[in-house]
Length: 373
Length: 215
Image 1: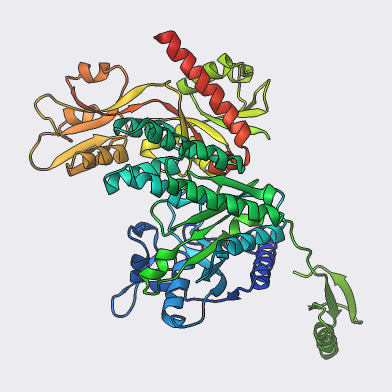
Image 2 (image 1 turned 180 degrees about the vertical axis):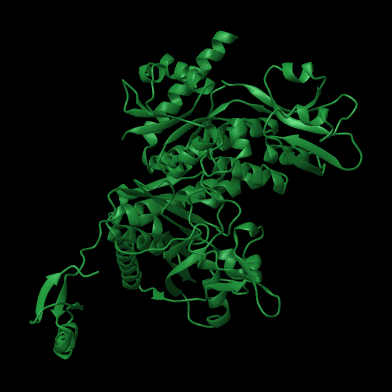
């Protein structure tokens, strides 16, 4: 007799389910207001779909199965890759931009006893195709979603992977050095980063740039500070673009929520430009993440700009109030009057009032307002 | 906003308290702690918690502690998502590769077996040398395993080297230098940046003052 759930999986009931459904509704409603249409994709994909998407796939995190032809299948790791696959196969010729939203479970094998979930609900949007204002559109959608959830305190932090890549291209000769530098900066591993840059024969200005990069985070003042360390026109141009985004978000009234982190460079994924993450008080990890991922579409044979973000809904459950539970009629009835009781319940339910039946040792039919479980 | 800081119990805890005290933090509760597990700073809005080294990473990664002080050895052996921001230059020692003088695993031809408490560190070290080794996890005195002929060599932490010498083992190479590091939860660094940076800057100042004194 097996009564346990697999590692990292949970049964949900009661308030947790109500909160989850509430959050789902809030998010999908917000996405819809911004013109995104919900899509659903299968829980399983071919393993090859993911190896097409990523150069270095974290194989061990995938839940793998075999189909009847012995092809390897995988439970989806995220929703972005399946949606890009779908867009590339069914919407290749469609008018762009495409605006898709989703709210689906995604799967990642977790290590034993680390307290992490293997199944989480991912809710987000993908905007495929676009124009000069599409970055802003996606950011605004993300900010409006965070607002709609009604969190107590949160910030949205913006980065730009090209800021590192432009600088690094001029300095690091091997792909390996590039990876090491990106990883150390992304993890703000200051001690090893210092050892690493000192071991490379660098121009002092460039060395200072890389040592400062992990610390270039905070309010929009960091963009000004970054100017002092920028060492070529292309880096200045990226700062100009970020400043324009900052101004735009300020004009739209989101200014107080915005932070920047130029040392945010998750190197081994598909982001190619602007990236962003949201953090909320009470959660130790980011609650929303997204960015621009043009190269992913090309990998599936549909060259196009693309941007998106997603929220890990399960991390938000503890941050929100339990939605008020609808009261429900409890109808107590004696066995010989069952027909009347069922008809009464049907009448109430038709009018949108929850009603539940309760066989009782009584002569009368009594209905009372109660919390029915 | 208040901070919670996880300190690795034992020597690192005492030495970290020294650094904090040097910068004027109220660490009296850390000195005289009794059975309490959560120890408030008497001058700042900081709670200290005393934890085992591996738990330090776990608590910081989950964000229930904003900062943690933990040895580089634990960080190298474990995995986790956190910022590693400062070297406190205390609790210094190193990972070494050692064995019997006539049997150097770095030069041996054929199958190499290594005994260690730190399988990941040993694997990474030999991978960096392009040597394929079989690793056997030992929980107690690792020095025993080459003496009994179970393994060709060991990867272990060395402080004084006395145990190695007493058993006729020699050091073939230093794999990595170790010292205590300050790790920071990612979300805490974003949401409590000023508070976190204050502690980091204070500690950094204490570390550099001590470096001056020792010069």
